[in-house]
Image 1 (cartoon, each protein chain N blue to C red):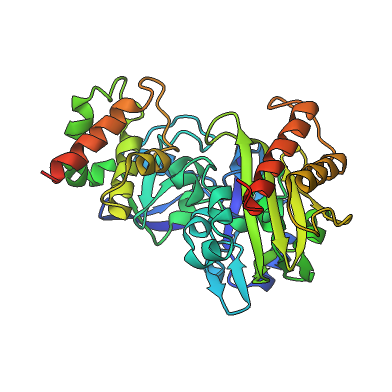
Image 2: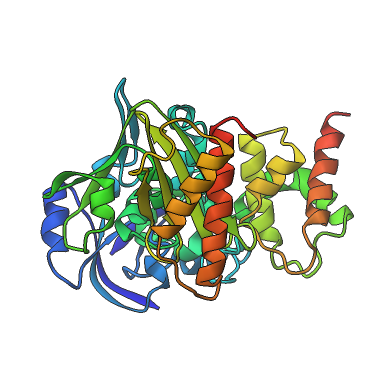
Length: 263
Length: 151
């Protein structure tokens, strides 16, 4: 059980940041995962009053506040038009509607959870994070960073022309994923993102230009091989490392076939 | 700290602990339809509305509800009465423990989408677990209610 001594609704990012420098204080996102922990929090810092619960869309980008819920992502017309519903597909099986009305993108991305569908799908886009002190960084860089006491303010998705696909394998709907797979072609460059390995999601770029001449059965198989060779998988209660490798091949191939218009 | 919460239309002002969960607050105020189930935010038994949006009260701090309106099934009897008979007619209320959460989320579904397909019902109610029925009874009940509205 989580014990909280004090609760503060921060009135500025500076106030939240200063409070967050103390190790026993914690930023509260949707509180879904945090609540599952045992231990004691001195001050729970709530960002709810800072207007970070909005998705702003301009001609060039989406600016998504850290307190935007997964349900808001799921229903956002602009984001789903841009990603051809990849974002919706990524979050729709995360527990239920009530859960997604609470869980935030900030909590999901900051937590960099291994099982995160959210981290996986956003890594497939031209995505950046804005940290209060750390400034704007590519999400791929942020995803491999260690935890610190900064504050995640917003997620920025550049509307770079692209195509996005997402799928995941779950033992049953609403369960944690056994593996998550996103595939994208952004500005002519392909990347696969694999999460729930069970470690944090990682990006595999088509550095060998396997798909540069287009997607065919042969190039798809070669790219799947490239992805599995560059991903380290592990075993846990949901599946073995070998099973995950197999799933990565199958799901990435399905995404490639769909993207190439072959299936 | 002091919170002001409008619970089923009644304004409550109270000093609460920083870590008091909303489920404990509403049950302390007589809203026993809100059940403690998995406590891992998976089962939907503790569903309440916060400003009309379904949330899980087992994972919400009461202090976060300060200044907001909370509704439980006790405050939504009339809206629920329109369809719960159809669910009962299908025998979908076996042990009954999951029913209040199911009914709350069905209200949310019908407010958002008054004429859902069977798949849309399944997707929206995926966060409400029932260990008795296999969900077919609830689906038949909601479908039967929707069909009855079409005459």
